[in-house]
Length: 64
Image 1 (tube, rainbow, N blue to C red):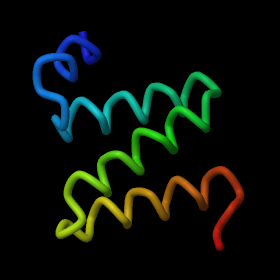
Image 2 (image 1 turned 60 degrees about the horizontal axis):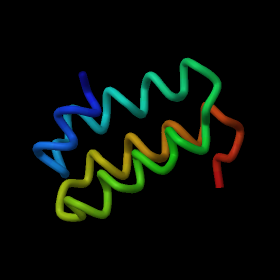
Image 3 (image 1 turned 90 degrees about the vertical axis):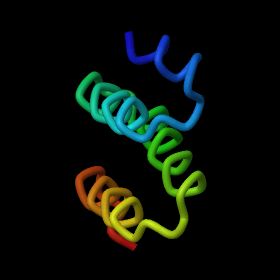
């Protein structure tokens, strides 16, 4: 499972992104946001992680 992957590889970006997507689809925006922030903090040099976070905020109605 995705959580098993994170247990073995704590900052696996793909697993964290997939979990964020699942959390959002299941109505758990705080858990999704937490996972997206974790990705951005783990790899701050990758601009796309911040784009992904911004798109999430737009979807949940917090564009600022």
